[in-house]
Length: 106
Image 1 (cartoon, rainbow, N blue to C red):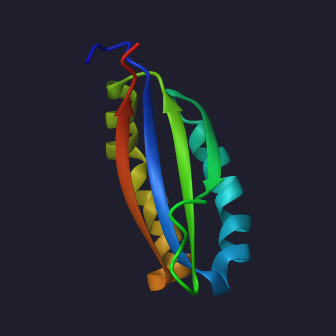
Image 2 (image 1 turned 90 degrees about the vertical axis):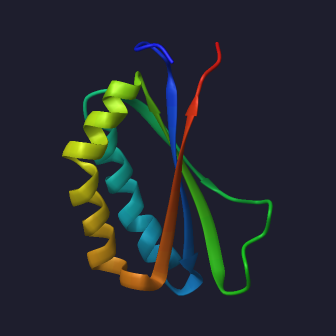
């Protein structure tokens, strides 16, 4: 992957429906803050339609756009620990997150 590759950093969220509205209210400024960091070019938040969430759960997907792997590496080392801790402190074990990175072929 070249230094100029475009990346999607995807965060998949599984949360208790009881916290859905509070989580979404927190998520909007959280995503906006991340988008101000070097290398981020935007983000989009999705509610996962398929497969359906388990009963009592909601599933979301946030896709952040970055300019390069170096930008992602910088985020992961310099900013991610603090930002992830904020979500854990506020919502504890009522949500889970998994992450993946998608690299553009074109």
